[in-house]
Length: 279
Length: 173
Image 1: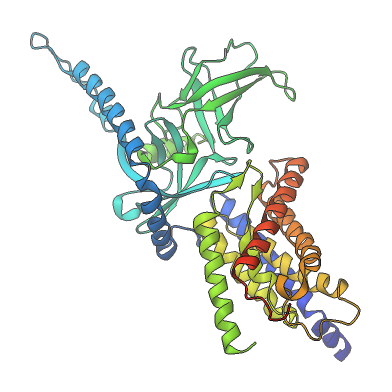
Image 2: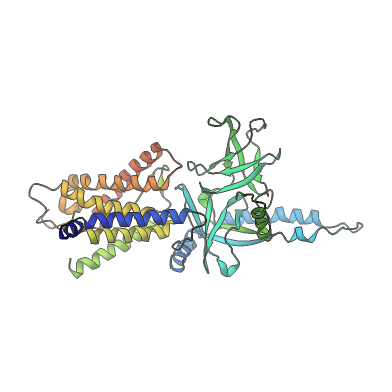
């Protein structure tokens, strides 16, 4: 018995090493599983405030560009608003009020981001206090950015679109053919459009937008432009479509968050009918 | 380790941490060469340190970097591996007379050639663990090796540069 204890004492460093490695791997796994609670991440107060300080300095230099994008967007919205105004000589018919309240929008600022790993995340400067909830979609004037993963009081952490674990239900705008956009972990300016069948005629230059099927993003938010069409080598029934992302992830600074207020209802309906919906 | 060494070590850790988190986080030369300059904090710990405290220091340091990188566990696993490999590697490359007189395995005390052969394999091993964890199930072996090789070259350069710039040289050498 003493021998065994002595032996164990002699290899204590190795035992500790194995123990710490197992702890680290457990942290990796629990952090990456969608349901796993992530206790330690940059949404905690100290880390969040430090990242915010850094973002304050860095983003000062991109203010001009951000302003320009906002002006462009304002112009676009003004145009739509004018189209909505009812001419004086007509009789408007009120639409279903439930539709109008389906999506709610909020704004936030990105204070931390990465784009060089295969699982990339964003940290936002708003949290539960400002009404941010896990599962909200994130986009900016250029296109889709990601999806909120977890929130704390003042900050929140989100999956970037550049995260191999995130799939976004999308469609080709011109033909309404739908598929899923997923990043393949290689190039931060490109993603793949999956599950588009072979008979579909897709050409380089077609726009890819969100489909509105997944109840996270409203329909028609830009994702990117198809840059390459090729038959899939692994599964000949599908096309291998490369999408050039319209969002430049190296300078994402201000973003909008969108919440589907009827998400819970849709989700429970899906569960009830045992359909697993992708996000 | 006396109190003065401890304080200067803590200052080094804070300096390396700040540089790592605020400047090197989003830096990747040509998309493949990452810099993990904070590893210097594990590499220059005294040779005489026991493996158990070394493992704890590396674990804590890796975890701290992980918090900011949003990659919980990945730096931790790799840094712990580096710390464990360090004690084995130091034993196997010990000079004939042993390490008796020297205190820490730094560039100034051990010379350029020795330091390179000490740090490069360790940093390469670290990068290998890190990128394997990062690309688990997605990337191929080729991309892991590619990133590991260039990251360890880049990190080695930076680690040597930091020592040349900020470490006091021994008088007489």
